[in-house]
Length: 279
Ligand code: NAP
Image (cartoon, rainbow, N blue to C red; front, side):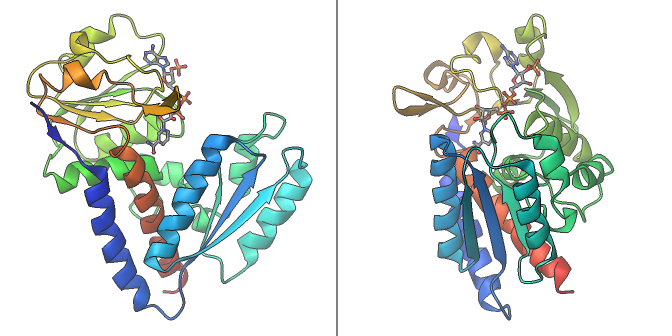
């Protein structure tokens, strides 16, 4: 039976560490979360971030804008926060309504405050393995989870399923930076089982429950399930955990795996931003 990669335990450890570091700062780090519209899943994720921020003594400002807000108004807000010295990190909670140009908005965030690590400046730093950039929170969370359980990806074959700019691509790059051999699969990949079966570590970031089954895996593997889909009010990952956990060595649960790690990693980035800005 697989051992569990428990994100809640690691998140709580990070929370303790961040809390004690923040207690010793002159002022708490400040994060601004901007939400556009009222996506119910975003509401849940934002509530988790606010709760975690309170727990560690960070200051979280939450700005909810109406779904029909213009790009001009949003950009005005961003430019105010970009230049406000007391604000260390800014995130725009995704998804945003389709009428807004997501890429343009992300590029409007000051890269020094882009604690979600989505700005092209930070993406380039990730590509160049430059540690001064911000690694996107989910990717960072996956790496920290593996590190906690002493699973070293160097020299290993890592298969990342999914190639989004938010998760798949940065995760693939981050593993390359750690000297893994990386294969990236996506919706056009043929005969994906052939590839996933040869992996040492599989990272699934798709959002399709039941995508990864016993037919995709081999004994001894580590499986990280990033996928989160609400089915009948319950959160489901991409992996059919019941059958897979009988075969592999390690598996991250959904919920309780990568999700808590993502929140904790965001605040690690916020502390990094604070320290950079106050050096
Ligand atoms: P996304 O933008 O929709 O990307 C999904 C990716 O999956 C795409 O690259 C797509 O390929 C690929 N894909 C779709 N069907 C596939 C198939 N049958 N086989 C292989 N690949 C397939 O989603 P995302 O933003 O990356 O998020 C992925 C999942 O992670 C979602 O469930 C999301 O909710 C979850 N998530 C969780 C956390 C967390 O903290 N736990 C954080 C962020 C996201 P193409 O590029 O070819 O379309």
